[in-house]
Image (cartoon, rainbow, N blue to C red):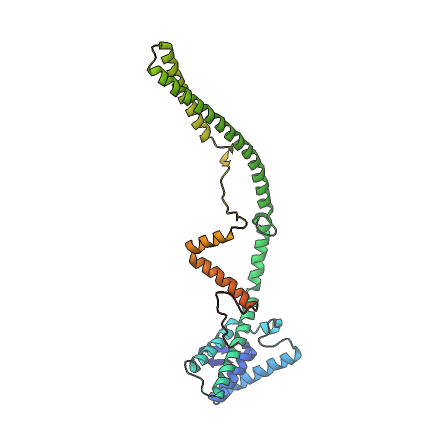
Length: 308
């Protein structure tokens, strides 16, 4: 037997208690001539009430209903139920409540909606549980090897990669230190050779000694050679090579806060990124208000009354 709702037909045997009882009340009130549906809905409600008495945990809207109740929480029935409730909401919203009866009706509809959300969320959790388990099995299988180092339990391959990187980094750091030392020595040699070449060149300009002039030219040539050697050293990159893409050192930069100078940083970002600073301060204030703080410099703590 199907219940003919405003959103379409739905099998009565699949309807959860809240939906069935609401539909039954609606038919008795608005369409008493639909006797077969009323009888089927009444029977359905009685069956669910009997199950509830037999199992106190089988309560509509419970966060963890038993499996036999979850079986009734099929999407098609829940969707029709929620669509019906939404249709009722559209029928009473948009006007100001003028008497207690209207307020009570709106309150009942609100609770029905909240119960429907609980039912739907429980059904959603039940429906996707097998998928969650399958995804977890896949994730666990792969994460055992490739979970990133930031995870609580890094994967074996990720840890092995770190070990190799650290090993190679130590060697490349040694090569880099040696390169820097060679650069410094070559730079000193270039500066010395250049100074000697300049002095010899100046002296040769007024010299009448051929040997002195030729010696100056040799010093200039030697200075050029030293400069080329320095450029060659500067181009060298400490690397690990083989039948693969070369592995070298890269520069990574991070900001390290200077103790006692946080005010300067705050002033800088308040000037350069004011909206982000405002959002951050708002977040801190919101956290304080939630924690019970009622007085915050620069903020008005405003009380609002809302329906829970």
